Length: 259
View (cartoon, one colour):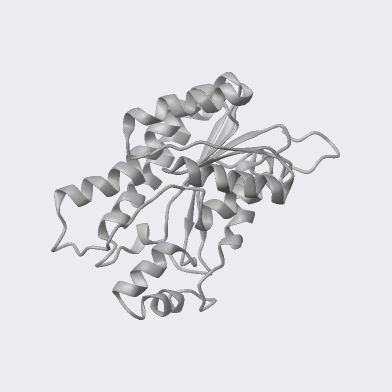
């Protein structure tokens, strides 16, 4: 709980991991958590990129950051990654499972088992394994918050995002299971479901299917695609004591899209 006279959004003294945080909404979330006072771990697959972004975030926010590569699609890479993070400050308080892929959007008819498994290994198995490793450390440290980044596509599907949407729908269900199991540990688990954001993934889909960006913008009440900075408030809410009585939930950040 928040001490009297302090902001419930203050993350000073906390350690936060954000996977997939060298670009897009992941980088925006990592920067926002750092501005709130957290020591942030910048993570993606390439160590040099992690180092570069960590240095940039630290310079912008004035708070400690570290870059540490991890391919969340590789099950066995995750435990040593978590061990290194834990050794950094001796505790982990926030985990944002943001890393996700939708490589070369593929229709249901053209789906291969290799493609399906690749998407699920990153989008579902990665968050599962990461949370499995982090939650006991949070428990032993007095609690924490896990935020799984899902998508509004989990509720509606689509012909070229079938594997992506299915994996994120499963992640929302997994979020609910985690929240029930780990509530006695003081570990809260929630999901955020973004709508259309200006990211490399959306740009790639628009190149393959011209007009895709306008189409998804038209599915929102606000009739626009969001800037990555617009995810910061929601993730800060779930990561901090401002949401101390919130767990097992999925909050849409979608300009009014209907689930």
